[in-house]
Image (tube, rainbow, N blue to C red; front, top):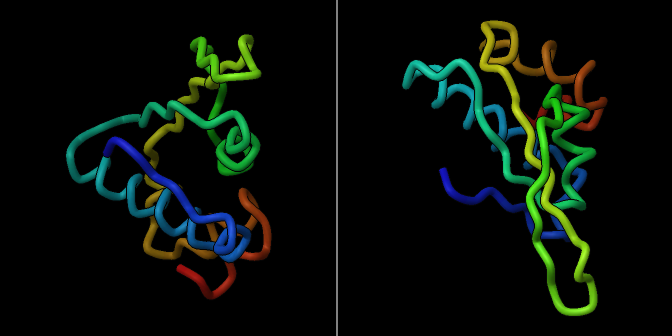
Amino acid sequence: MRNLWVAPEHMRQGFGRALLFHALQTAALGGASFIHIDADPNAESFYVACGAARIGEVPAPIAGQPNRIRPQLMLAVTRSNISSDADAIWRPLCGPSVAGKL
């Protein structure tokens, strides 16, 4: 997958978690043991809350922000984060807003 975005008006409704959960399941089916996330700086806290770990950063300057970086994250593909009982797994990781959305 090259991009995963949630429109601002749909954030904090569980859609990002659902998309990430699907990406993890798809990665598992393909035999991956982790996914690499090239994150938008504003999305890093979401991925960290979902269990990702920061492994680095890359320069990503834009007009007016010459020192901007994009965090590089890794999220392990484990049996517990691809379980069919996603709500029970993701609620403690990402918060209660996932309830009933997956």
